[in-house]
Image (cartoon, rainbow, N blue to C red; front, top):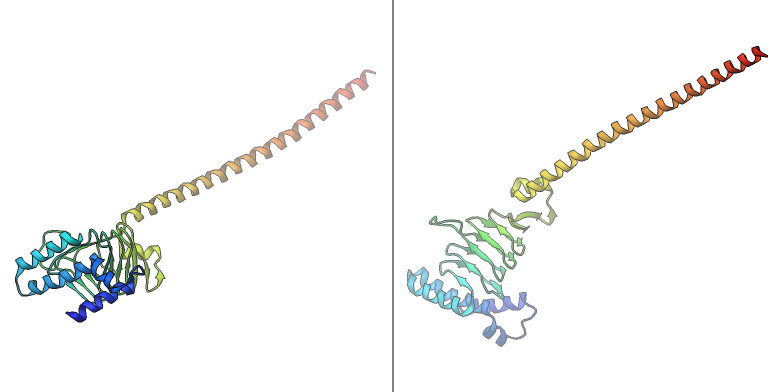
Length: 250
């Protein structure tokens, strides 16, 4: 237990540049307090002393503003920064060296029993306000953006953003649009693509109409020039005839 507490304090210094002293961290960091409360509550929970475990977790919630179900399994060096509004469900599993910010929810999506909360791998960062809902895995070394809503599995070494969250980077490489659609269907992206397709079709139709209009304009100009030539020729013939008539009259 003492070794675990030391590693928890070290995690604060590793992840928060505002941490100045061990005394300050131990007595003022609510995320650290919530983790220590949870480790005690989880000890009772594993021994099926559920009521005592829930009393401890609710006391922690009242003091810290962070609600961690005593059944959740949390690895080493877990760091909650600021922490207010964090909710971690009963069947959550969190790996080592995970960083989590305020307003994060690791929750379920229904009333099913058994495993219903996410499993978070090691070295994962979950930014403020993110909602990770359902029984799936967030792979190691992944990043979840602020206010993202994650409803399906996240591969290792990925970055996900947006509501509904979509994969934008995998193994350090940006993912193209086709991979977005294949891995994480996003109705907003689909609608935007449909709109873009309609705009492209309208542009193509307008280009065709413009080509036809330009062709018609060119034809009219050719006809105008032809009629102008004919009119000039007709005038010349009439003038010549009139001149011939005058010559005969003389």
